[in-house]
Length: 459
Image 1 (cartoon, rainbow, N blue to C red):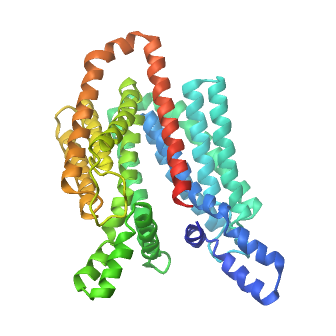
Image 2: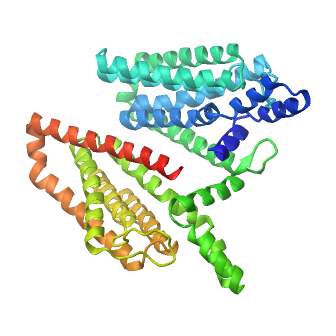
């Protein structure tokens, strides 16, 4: 947590706590010391993560809509950010003196972007659900969360109150105007003109690609000096934490002890390689696969998606049962003592990868696009599975068995749904409700398990 706070504070301009620390050491002020500590507390983390939370909200709305309004919203989001930059140049109002950032602060870009996205999300929810109690609850939740994120820009002393208020007002008004322009002037023409559809799609795609490029470059270079970003240092921290979390401590302890006793260059190399980029990719692989699965579920949002969620948990349960029955140890090079046959990572990755491939084939048929996406998914999943062997967390036979079991179970589960349950699901409200409740309960249980697992590993 302390490491994350330092990194996040450095990224979001809250490095002013460093200057506050210097003043505290010079003036001996207890208030300044308190400000320094609270500025690097939990709110610093939430403030840094807020833009990613809002981005995920926006991406979810876009994926759920998948229509012309979604494309128009992407264009509007980028236009809103460009407007913020223009206003900053025109107004040229400085940020608070407590931050080391020298760019203008009026209006707050964070506040303006968060307001645009939150209002766009609220308008979409109202369009889908009307003025029901559910829509009112969701709208209040979105607005409350985004208001809190905006307030953090003031409490972290990155902006003044007037800067975030102006940003919030401009972003909200711009979103309403943008949304109204689409529905009043462009929607009817969009639905009847192939040229306009193509133009809007290409502009939205180009802006999305430009945004992704900007994020990548921002992660590699640190403007304006364009020095290598502190991501390198952050990588080192991630490796150490990920190794502890995934049971690879032996690569730092046992191997290092052997190297120090025998002076073996090979062992030293093995120790260093175990702390390389593959260790990070291995640790992040389950989150990449989880995001793939969540994206497929959101894109489908049908009975098959709910059945896929139930199947994913059933597949993981099957793996636990097989581990207890077979009770085969992991490689001696790992400190983990639980059984390794079959590999739960390999089994889950295979299930999700195959479920994604079957969904893509269902959507696109056997076109070149579906073939490319399917090959990409399978290749990525296979690489993630191979890492379990290269990181010496499983033997080859353990990951092969896990991959086979996960794939076979997915095919069986998918076929059973289409052959036996799909027709009954479409005609029975009771079955629809039952499948939904079971999938929702399993999703909630998974979320609770993840949270508890974080706390257990951080003790």
